[in-house]
Length: 174
Ligand SMILES: [Fe+2]
Ligand SMILES: [Fe+2]
Image (cartoon, rainbow, N blue to C red):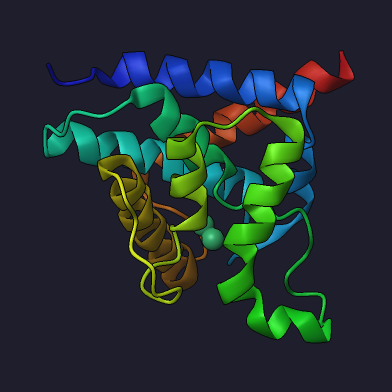
């Protein structure tokens, strides 16, 4: 059965709220990914795009793992534009840093780990092992391309990510 938009939006929203409360996820609001898009917004867009891909192609997935893996795929928690020498290899190393950080804050399944570690294929030339990891790898490239070319992501996913950004900023202050 195809997942409904409302259903996956609700699932992403719940997961983000939980991550903001129980981990360092809100730190990702302070780091820019591409264009004007923070890592926080980028990761929500990638989770959204991943759900859209599975819906359009009617792929059977573990939806919870898909969303968790997508939200944490760039959980490296530093500013990769800060000019530090080691950032020159950011493209190659950040999936492993993200996975290490994520494992400090969450109990990850092997599937979720694979989603995070393999999302930079083919730059990191080890392919994803699971359907979910392939989907996130593709969704990340679509979002990164939109962000690089236009400075933001297109359509409903960007709107949705901004809604969650507002909601979780208010939540923290209140
Ligand atoms: Fe990445
Ligand atoms: Fe990414």
